[in-house]
Length: 326
Image 1 (cartoon, rainbow, N blue to C red):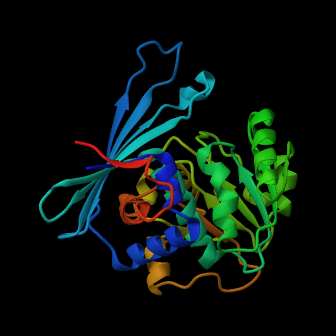
Image 2: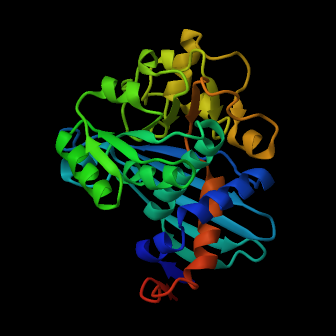
Image 3: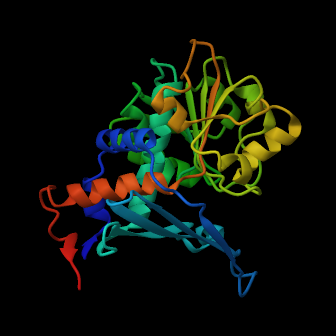
């Protein structure tokens, strides 16, 4: 069994190739059971919030199986640690043989950003050049590069609850060639953006629909439980709404609260697979407001894990990070 660490996995998952792999997998499909979610209580609530353990499987019969284990501990920010950690196991679906253990944080963050970019390639304005990133964590840091793979993103504003984190990310993005700056006025930044990408663990709405101009694309990444929200119900009113999977309609606080407020159309929304397969249309005119809500799916983990496994050995200099373990 091969061990593919974070460096080797990232090198094998450039956004152009990863977005294409996700598109293919959404078109062709795979078996994706509902994820298992388990609450991990805090032993000492004063020292940190409770955590969540997620188990996410998917497979293509006769090809490969993926199982991802994810731990989410929102209180980690106070410890200077990422809130999310994960590991991915890839197996042969013909005989069950383990093929690789892959750094799950890299798989999760890059496939999450790539899925949002895939949605933006179908929903955001073709000339979208101004991006607002809400959040400053691992996924937020990848959003400009992912979006630049599908849209001509040049200007990036970063807002986070901790201004120093927003500034650090803006400095990093500037070093990567973006016209990037941290901002403290979230409303002003949202009104000016062509694309707004939220990648937080917020339980209260951060973005108001009244701030979003005609033609804006809103990308909601962070909330994956009924208690989590990044946008208010007004963000959904009058917008073209697409979800990564229909699981978002029962697990996303953003969707559930909007549905309770009556700002989403009755009936199931279009999914990213619908768009990729041509069963639903993408953006229809320049002034249309669009919204993509994701909660993540093991389909994306399978696509990314297969690409990492097949591509890691072909990446120059990956020998130190991709090796056999027994």
